[in-house]
Length: 223
Image (tube, rainbow, N blue to C red; front, side):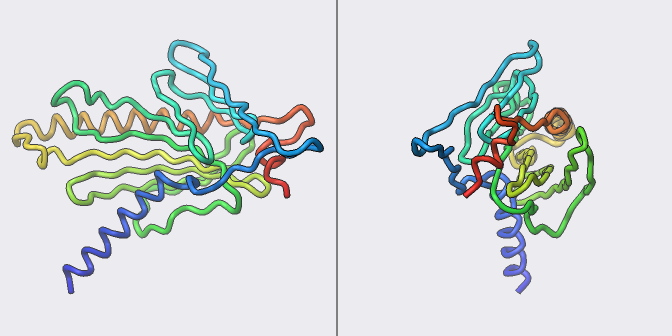
């Protein structure tokens, strides 16, 4: 019985983590429709502001954010995915598997995944925009997970921000006891730095409007 309960708990945690990475990926973005029919829109831009900071702007989804220039960006089905360097090229420096940020604009109300353990919960304001936040961490099958999520509603859509880090437990990688503390500290420093940058990204959030003054995410979601 205990073994069955443990398996169920592990599956719930893994399912929650998978939710962070795939939230909104099954959503289909609507095209902008005008009197001439339906047209495709691709108004996304990435602009280098300084050597350290770049600007991501998406007129269709109605928002812009600033992010570290060193991050990579990739379009997702409902927003953008940012990849964060882990320093994995330096052998033995850390056991970080993934650092990732997802921004998704999805229809409906904002809802965080159903989890039992929440390490932090807060509400912040950015330019009079209220964001709900939760953070959680888990260790499952030799991997350490940390997630921080923000959400804010706007009309009929939800802006969802996910930060996720996954690190392999150094002891499972064959590190001797005298090196465990060093590798764990490297993992923590990487995750903390990425988390801090993610929180700055959220605080740089701004709505983008179309020439007619409407938020494009709301405009394109109208039936």
